[in-house]
Image 1 (tube, rainbow, N blue to C red):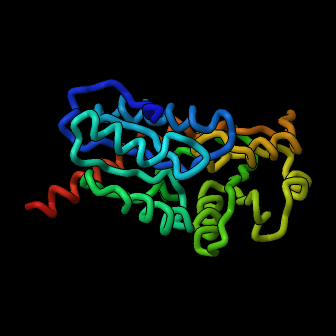
Image 2 (image 1 turned 90 degrees about the vertical axis):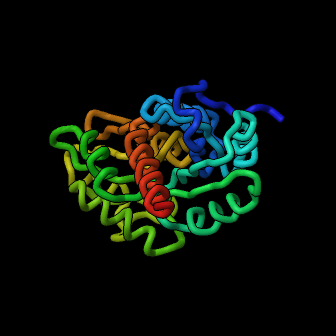
Length: 237
């Protein structure tokens, strides 16, 4: 096997290893963005952190578990790098994790669409620009509603790559009603759908883009790990 990429050994080696479980993408730069986040999580927590992908990449969940076991870990905490409780979060993640029978694994909640994500997104909106939250979209209405709520929380509106907007407005429609528009990708890393949007709507003086969130999500991942550690400690007392 090709070894998975892992951050160097650290004083936190006695803690459970961390697996950042991403959806995966065919984009040539997607995996590098997840690795960037893994490195940032390691810097913030001192814990061995490895990236894994549900699909489209040979650094799979199995590879990640193998790497942690080879470093002497018997426990791991899995953080799904997913924003909503859609199919991948509720079906793919638990089914994938259930196949590992050598590590004692805890799964944290995903990244979510709560106040921490809203604060991170809001910090990237240029003054005077109307924010558009660009997300992939889901077949599950409740997942899309959570993105819609997040978009409204930051003072903007959602745009789904696979489903348009809830109101039927396209990006062209949005641009006719706002002088300046700023796209905030609800993407952990680079993706083909984000590239397609930029190709069809290149940046201009009146249309700008934030990059994928990548390493900026490290503090949110750190909170997920802290909450997981606290709940485990409480359950053992």
